[in-house]
Image (cartoon, rainbow, N blue to C red):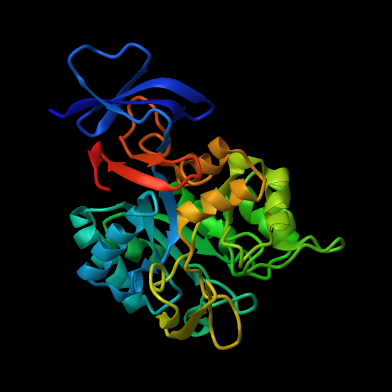
Length: 378
C-alpha cells in the first residue's frame, strides 16, 4: 500500500486555500489535516501551490495525433503529451465525420483507454455531427444531420458507454426529444456550431442541455434585438466553455462571461487539435488543411480550426488578465469541468474520497510536478 502526505501552505481546496497536509493512500485522497500521522512519509511543497489536476473536456489531439485517427499510438501519445500541461483527465473529442469514422474512433478509445499512462481518458465528447452549416467553423457540412437517437445508441455501443457529452445545434429537427433521450442515458448535451435563435437555444436548455460549446465561437452572436445563442448562454443556468488562448476571445469578452455566469459556471477548454505541442506549419483537422502560425490554427477561409492551446497557459491567462484570482483560475480548469459532465464525485478537486490527481505549481502557476492516481508522473 502506498501512503504519504503532501504538505504545503498553499493547498487549493474547492473554496479556500489551506495550510496543512493532504494524505494520499494508494490512488485516493483519504484525509486533509493539520495533524499528520507519525512515521508516514511527508513530501514537503511548502511555498508551492498544491492544486487539483486539470480536466480538459474538449480536446481533439496533441503531438501530431488526432482522436479521429482511431489508432492506439495516437491516443496514448495525446494522453502522455498533455500531462505536462497539468491535464490529468480529458474527454477524447471527435469531429463531425462519417458514421464509419466515428464508429472507429469510439471503438479505439474503448479498446485502449486503460493503457494510457498520462492523463486519464474519462470518456468521449462527440462534437457533432448534429450541427448546421452557418457557424460551422472547421466542421464538415457534408456529414451534418438532424439528431438521431439510433446513432447515439450505436456510438455508445461501439464505445462501451463512454460517451459523456455530445454537442448539437438547437435549430435542427427533433432536438428537444433527442436532448431528453440523451440526458436519460447519462449523456450531457452541449450546444454549438449553430445559428439558433435565443428562443431555440433556451428551449434546448429547458429540455436538459447544460453546456454552451466554446462560447461566442461558432454560434449566433448577441444583438440587442436578437440575443442569439450568446444571449442564451448569458441568461440560462448552463455552463459556458471558453477558450482563453488570446486568439479566440478578447479578455474583456471572457470577463463578460464570468460576470454573467460566475466562475462556478465558466470552464476553460483548449479545443486543441493535432498541432498542439508541435512547431508551426501545416497540419490536418479532419479533412481540412490547417495552417498554424503565430499561435493560431486556421483553415483556408481564415476560420479558426480549434487551437494549439495548453490548458495550464489558459489558467495563467485568466489570472494574468486580471479576471479571477488564482484559486478560481485553477477551479475553472478542474472542478467546474468535472461538474459540467457529472464527474465531480471522483475528480476535479482536492477532497477526501477523490482520486489523488494533483498538480504542483509555482507562484506563477507553472506546472512543476503532476500526480495521477497518487503516483508522480512528472
